[in-house]
Length: 245
Image (tube, rainbow, N blue to C red; front, top):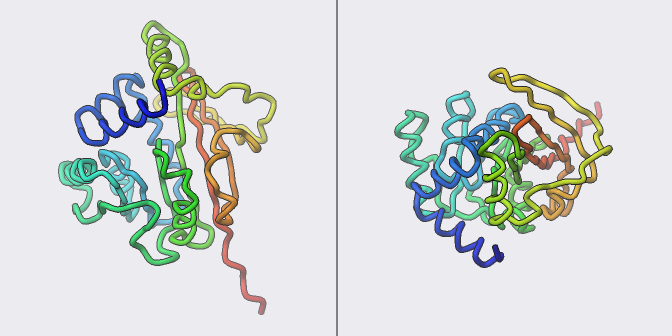
């Protein structure tokens, strides 16, 4: 699929909550919400901003987990859908979802401990976006970007879904060649499924996100299960220097 057709497809999804729900569920074998949930163990502090909250599911998850959250969403249709999700789940008031731009955040400097963006569109590659994220992050804060994920060709259904991903996202969606670069590995088990997290310095995924340009320290992680792989980029803001006594 050409970039223009892909852009048109995503713009169509952002204008219809029902198509968006279908497209983020069925083609990904129901794993989209699992991938979003990987954010929860990586949050820092208490105050969280989500960029591009979509239907608001992750936003509600974070609020229910006890975090104080706000969200910025460009699409009016998704703003309405996210507000409905908060109302349906009794997670928070509609005013916590704000229609706006990631390149011009309506918050003061040093407001948030963590900024989250899962499966973002082109805005995440804009230097203005990252500059704004750095501005609103507190010292020691963290940007978490779940940039991409793909299913492994296991079982009966997933090989067909992998083919769909290739047609829509192109061969880059199946990030390969990540071997013998692991800095550290940890394994956790959730609901009887083992997840392996690898620190992968110097990897190509996330390289187009201009973190260093705004002074954020880059970390690259791959999370794997038997059924899928997820690619996460972290941008960490330096902690405030302690005053010498």
